[in-house]
Image 1 (cartoon, rainbow, N blue to C red):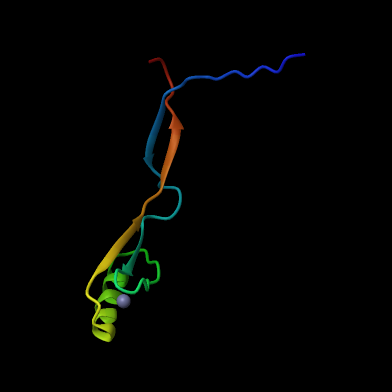
Image 2: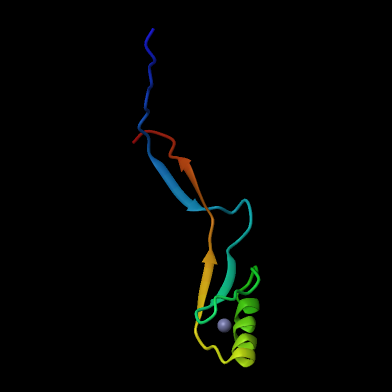
Length: 78
Ligand SMILES: [Zn+2]
C-alpha cells in the first residue's frame, strides 16, 4: 500500500492580527546590550533610553517593534 499526499494550492492572504495583542515595543542599547521592558506603547522604551543614556553615557539604541500577522485562505472564485 502506497502512501499518498495531496497538496492543495490555494490563495492565502496576510493581514494584521487584531484578535490578540497590538504591537509590542522595546529598545536595546547598542553599546552594552541592556534592554528595556516590553511595552504596549513606544513611550516606555523611549523613556528607558533617556534614563539609560543619563546613567551610562551610552547614546545608541535599537528600537524593536513586534507586530503580529494572521494568514487566511482567500475564499471564492479566482
Ligand atoms: Zn548601554
